[in-house]
Length: 125
Image 1: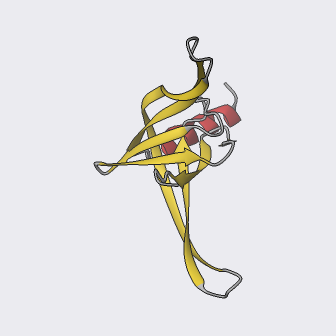
Image 2: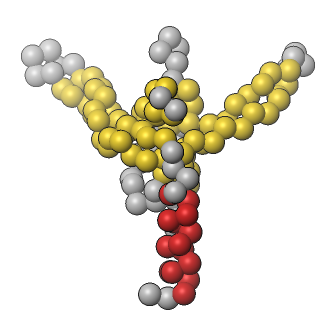
């Protein structure tokens, strides 16, 4: 193992020690009902109890009518060896509270970890 590989392994271990949350990751699968011919999407569990860490950033923004709003950016950190599809549904348990999110895009994958921007799941949207 090269010195660079050893350094990356140490960095990966150090980052994963910071993972204090857990998440369940769901994907959507198309199911065709043979009786009705209707295709629908069904949420299926993909991975369970994955160690992770969340990061929150708040920043003010203005709209066209110049009213200030506070926008929150939510980022999920996961091990780099887990494949997460864009559009997956993520349920995160943080300090005993479970909150549901949807992935907004493809993960940024690094040698030591991956980062995924999330959006809060709104059941009423």
